[in-house]
Amino acid sequence: MTNLFSSFDPSTNIMNLSINWTSAFIGIMLVPSMFWIMPSRLNFMWSNLNFNLHKEFKVLLGNNSNGMTLIFISLFGILLFNNFMGLFPYIFTSTSHMALTFSIALPLWMSFMLFGWVNNTKHMFAHLVPQGTPGPLMSFMVIIETISNIIRPGTLAIRLAANMIAGHLLLTLMGNTGPMLSYSILSILLMSQVLLFILESAVAMIQAYVFSVLSTLYSSEVYYVNNTLKSAIPSSSL
Image (cartoon, rainbow, N blue to C red; front, side, top):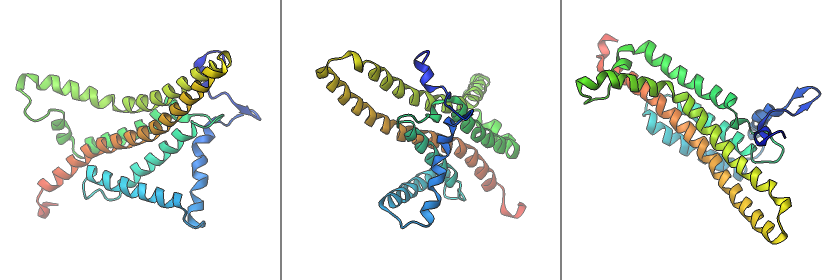
């Protein structure tokens, strides 16, 4: 390694092919087994998790979500799997790179914005000014709300990548000091690394959940505007 961050570089080559990013697709190989292997405790646990996520996302999106929760449940599963894969030795952490996190956040945000601005342009403009805003502050609120909407995919991508990198760097720093320590201090270091590994496992779940929930909230804003417009129009005129 030329520096500490080079451990996150996708530089492994086998037969002149970089296989680092293939770790993001290993989970797809496990999906078909659910259709021909007898359900195990892991299957039941995963089904209960998906059911609870479906109920929570349905509350955020509304009762007429029409299966939109499946998109965000799938997003949660993909991020959760990739976050956990990065905790294993010699496996490339794909979610610690902006190339993956930004590639997920930007298309989601862009699709929400295009749907809202194309179908309900006036209501999206009205959404830039919160209710009760004084007249002299309306122009400033439009600028602030526009900037906050534009930086949403960046904040989603940076939040996930930064949290994944932070724990891995701390584990690497603590592991590099091991050969220079005595046996008594080394046992303390190992215990602290185990505790940090448990913390990183919790962070992997929390960050996947936060990413999917924030994406759901961003879509619910556009979805709420669209439903509000439809409910305001009489059914005879549709």
